[in-house]
Image 1 (tube, rainbow, N blue to C red):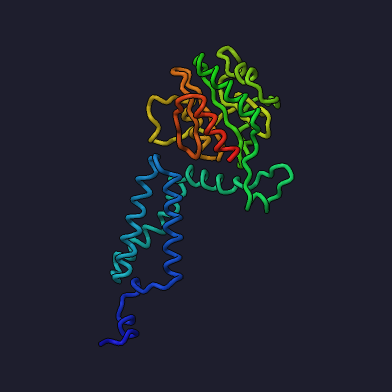
Image 2: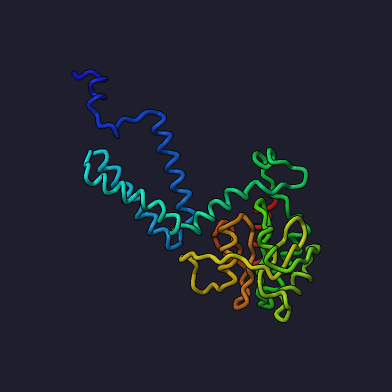
Length: 271
């Protein structure tokens, strides 16, 4: 019988795994999964899968000591890094924005340390929630289009700067007046943060996801775009159908009524 050490010595290098290698593989797998979640539904996902395939082939030929192919793929991969920055610039920006802004906003007396270990979701009170729900209910009945973003952990200051400052208490009549068809502020989105309507007529980033159903208009695409780049809770009322939809983390959900909207708001801010 072969000695265990002799057996291990005869194994190919890429088959020798220790605990650090296993941890390394798991972490790389998690990283790839997170990147896939960010670009899922966009045209970039096909490019991403193609890159993974090329990289896998490079690992195989390198392990088999195929020198010519290894050299060629080395050059392709080294040059490809610069190409990736160009191709994935929107996805890289989205990833870094979400990563960097998650804990930069302090809540009241809460410091960075508490934000890291006890992330809060208390930026919307029960009364403010009811004002939003009542406004959305009436706008839905009247088929008044609306786009509302409620700030959570990530600051929406860069969005409020694109619109007109309001700095008013959250009230259903004010929300309805902003989105009234003849209002000069109705075209664009509203930002609610720290218990106040911060701004209206704001410009939200458009999503380039290919998975958005064609019957959703520009208002829905803008709401999804903001939810992809931040952790904001976005509400859209359709001008064509009166349907209420919510967006979180790039996922759109069409609601059956205001009861479901209340449940989603409670889960987002009071769980």
